[in-house]
Length: 86
Image 1 (cartoon, rainbow, N blue to C red):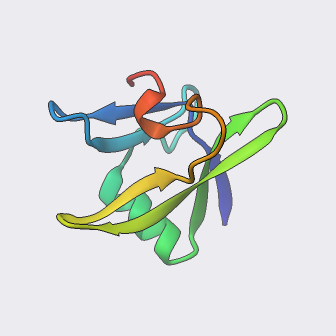
Image 2: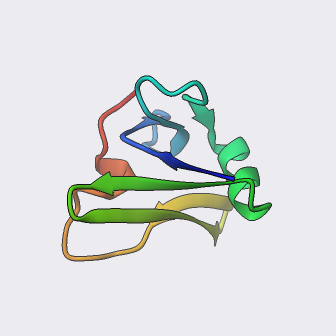
């Protein structure tokens, strides 16, 4: 299993996350469905790195299927929606 840092995201026209990205990594971009599979099957973890730590990316159920998200905390800088586009 590898820990994969996520520094950018790809979004569709509605702003939904469609891929996770990190410049210079061979796995990037990783499609949302593939990242969900990786997380649920314990193949890889994905996280948003910070100088003081990291924020884990989780799979959560939604009204239109599973999606990726970070937990709420006191900053928006680690929200997947707020990361730069890839």
